[in-house]
Length: 360
Ligand SMILES: [Fe+2]
Image 1: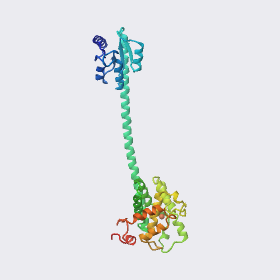
Image 2 (image 1 turned 120 degrees about the horizontal axis):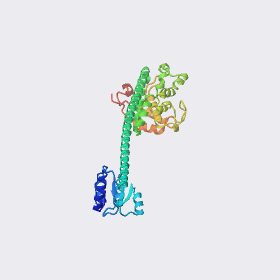
Image 3 (image 1 turned 90 degrees about the vertical axis):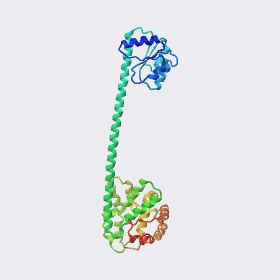
Image 4 (image 1 turned 60 degrees about the vertical axis):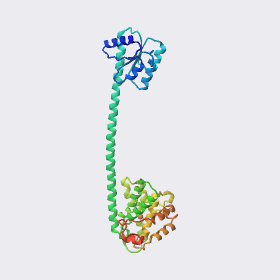
């Protein structure tokens, strides 16, 4: 309690001690502010005190977010003061001298009860927060675990499909290594165009599986020497949509599905399977269209001889605007010149054919 009158301090202390309370006194508000902490149950303030008066002390306590009940005990018992005290958040307003000790004691006890209630609520809140934090941590841990599982499942699926794809290519001498080379070209071009990591991942997967539809098409016609008949072409033209359908149930490769379905479309809308035009295709699809054709041109096929890099780039330019995106061809032409294919990815025979100056 704070009161500038030593006599009042002694008297009130004695009364409170008589009712079994422990009392710490201060001669003004400053003393209260210095000492106050959570161990106090009730603060009793006089109003007229030197330096920091009762109202100013209450202001400071509010600034400190102090939630200890404050009782004003003053000789200046006017209505104005009482209203001001209540507005400041005081718990009660009592006048000196204390006439009825029992009522005084009841008021003090009620204030202590309120304090206990506040403390209990605070402990409950803290426990609840701890609990929520713990639950959030557990949930985060489970989510991470789930993400790891789903990532490894995704990787396993991609791995399995790669194996199938490789098995398919091994059956066909003329397309051997095509998927690997197309993937290399696509990533080289994607990086040169400054694509973000997640875009490159989509591009990599789409390139890896762009011809997966050929898995379920009877390959005997592709392997036969000489030109293909119209019926055989009809069959081959089904591979983009068949490939997209193979990917579809996986759920996690929606964009790849689109790219695979449309990797034989043309800018002028005369491609297959849907006859989409350039403005309906995204950059990743346009990249795959260019690099897939480039590899087809520079690879030996059973129905024609392969082109050199220069001849193929010339052909890309010739068909840009109609078959290919001009911008993508530009990027490709500028960057393929400095592209040194890794030895492991490209068969030596292919390297010598397309890039005569490549390391032997
Ligand atoms: Fe294809």
